[in-house]
Image (cartoon, rainbow, N blue to C red; front, side, top):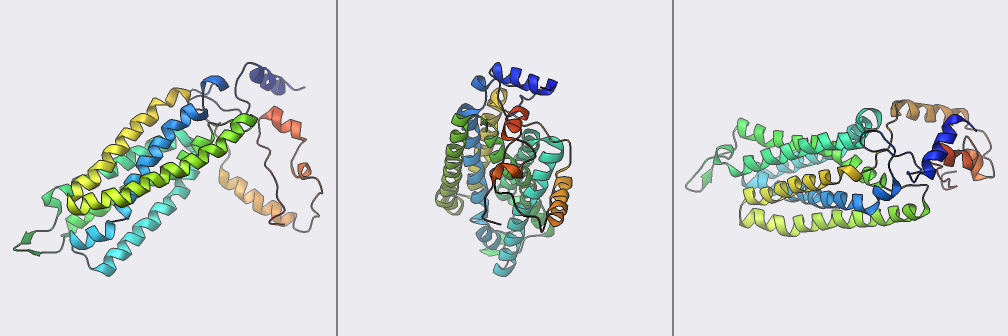
Length: 303
């Protein structure tokens, strides 16, 4: 048996995780004192507040643009669609940075601070009169160029921050469960159920509660509540830092792996698929257990 395999077995015998996860300092972590639900509870709290913040903006943004900045309906809808598109495209960049350079924890940490900065700026913009068009005797002028610039700058800062948080917080939660531990593997399925529940709970409160507050009690309060909630959720998230598990960062760029998959698939286009699923992998099943690499399941769905 190789030296690395012996070290892996010794590590597992001492009660460390079997999937190679580490603490923030790069040391092996004890399975009994890290990860699992005691770590994921912090992540679920963040997700609920983040969804509340996002949908608190997105669900009523057209109304703000038409009633407060006095944009026409067509322009408002177009601008909201552009912003929404950027919000859902930036996670590609965030996932790449996490996989290739920073890791999930640090990508999320930096991006979440950018997210909070955008929320603070947006709350300030909708609260201060100097950032709103002047109104005289019920007649309001259109927003000035600087007012529009400040408003959309805060929106796109939020979009940039969301790009690093969206793809990494859920996968970081999945990292808290050892794939090679049957009990923890079952808990991972339960985690994603609660993950979706917390996300929809935050979206529900935003759609029903924050929209009412924005239109009846004030836009500053309507944006200030999710901003305060997001700051609180970040504080809760960092409380769990000592017990989080971290996947070792892949030194190779994921773009290289994607390219190799395409090239290999084209080269093997006409090869006959093996009958046994384990033959798809590079080694025997026990090799994956010893090395700590995930032995992915295969399906004939896309044969």
